[in-house]
Image (cartoon, rainbow, N blue to C red; front, side, top):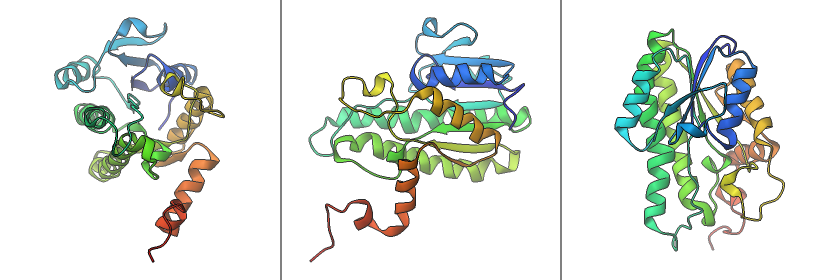
Length: 236
């Protein structure tokens, strides 16, 4: 997938990683970049602002109808409520699923025919290291991202026939509003993650691993539950 000359559509394109992806796409030579947000007035200059709420099906359909020239879809929009598995609000878990998993799926279903008519193109789904490992204090987000990863794998198979490349970006903490005020140190610069993501798309990588910690977690999947969660221990 060549970024240069592409027409990209970035959900959540007004801040954080989304804004950096929009900037990186423009710098890489994309001929047009739609930056989708609930409030399009917050989109940076240079992008084409478009209104989108990924949890509102009518909004998704309207956005796809306005952007019929898209060749690269970037599913970046997401929320993180830091919901615990037992004590957190169930409504927060529901919103995380509706936005991160079902919202991404709805947008993809709307744009898949557009990509097909435009030669196949590519999809980049922004996932997380928590697609592969769970934390009790972020269980809702992790479960939603795991569902999003499963959807991504299924989409690869279903869209292969129309020549659409489907890539997934996995990374750890980023220095964005999502973790502001949480006391988390050592978070990555989202500009660096955006660059890594687009390089991966151009190289045709189906799984794009943005940092060493995420690679370590992925490698640990084959070692068993006790390796990923040593505090649990083996059964007596």
